[in-house]
Length: 141
Image (cartoon, rainbow, N blue to C red):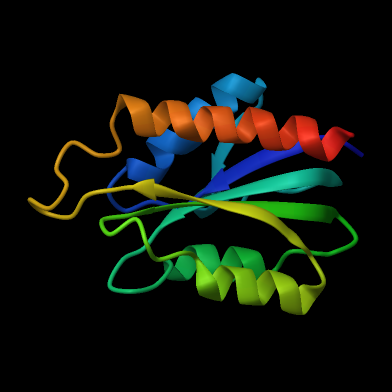
């Protein structure tokens, strides 16, 4: 069960941009949680989302609440925020309560209104894609 999957939730399309680049790098489809993607057994689930008003999007939280630890071996978080300091703490807590370990979290530069405009940029997208490849390879070992 070394298969990787990518899901994302987005308001500003920043998380979608990161998720699509990661999907291209791993040759897997990135699914919006709003589309209720069905998950089969997965070795590593990348959960991509942003921080809005200090927290994760409600639809991403609901998706994580429905995850089954029998189907998801590990998770990795990719978080876009204007401060690049705040992680998906509530998502991490929900995963840990379910017994799904979080392998790693990448904090990616996002933007808000005029703060950090232009992010995620080319370098941020490249960093997310490289993170996905590196972590997928490490989890396979």
